[in-house]
Image 1: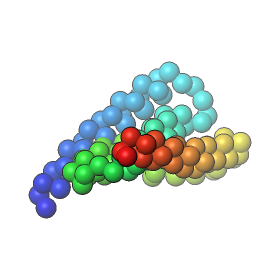
Image 2: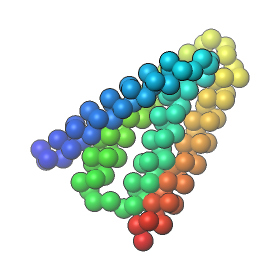
Image 3: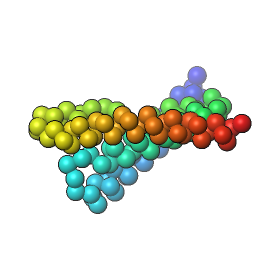
Image 4: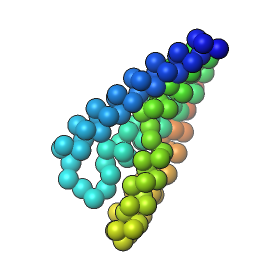
Length: 122
């Protein structure tokens, strides 16, 4: 039990730092009403989580990479908050674009990663 907690915790630490660093890097270089940084980390995380799942890795790697790193790297709560903020600002085009891109590309990239992982796994 302690080993599992440490795997998830260590991975979560790495994922949170990666998300923060990438988000800051993108935000400093992008001027857009669309929350590009959150969109990017969530789409990348969707693809990589699909890949990890498709690879059918051991429980050790799933806990560390999937639950830990990617659990902290991706951010569904920030996506929801930013969506609500766009809606309350009545920035309808950006709100719809952000929502559609997040869901459709996220699912598509997770599926693509899963399929690609399956090719490498077996």
